[in-house]
Amino acid sequence: MAHYHAMIRSRRPAPETFDYMATFSNAAQWDPGVLAGEQLDPGPVGVGTRFRLVVPFLGRRLPLIYKISTHVPGREVVLEAASRLLRATDRMVVLPDGDGSTVSYDADVRLRGPLRILDPVMRRGFNTVGDRATAGLARTLSAAPAPRGQSSP
Image 1 (cartoon, rainbow, N blue to C red):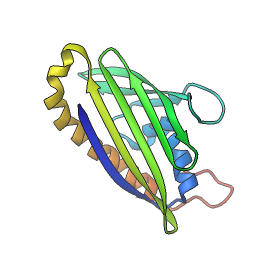
Image 2 (tube, rainbow, N blue to C red):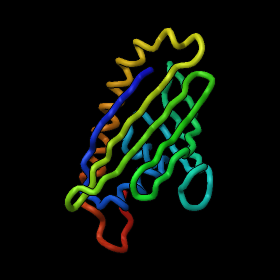
Image 3 (cartoon, rainbow, N blue to C red):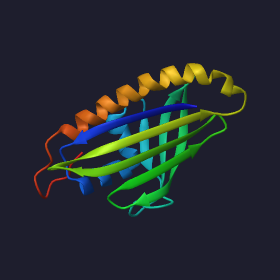
């Protein structure tokens, strides 16, 4: 299993940061390892909302359907995805921090079936992918909040 953890500071207040993070299709804006993202279910984000992210994996484009399994408004969201190749779990906790907020981001990926033999290689590569995603998210969340009435990233 590959695990990655990061703490990212946001200049935005916790509720705004949480809404941005919980809309997981936004990962395509900040994670260079996500080729595309879309919300599959209309309406507000909550338990059961699904997102399709397309990621590169073993030289191919792998679509992953993430589903929210835990949603504590303004605080915590957990998303899970499974394919015949892997299982992924992403957990984000957003905490108020002065004028902004801090995101605690945990990601786990478990290879399935015969691919489990590649776990040691996956762990090393996953740290590199995680560092790039963290850098992109930090850039996005460190931008000044949009003036009232305008949308933010």
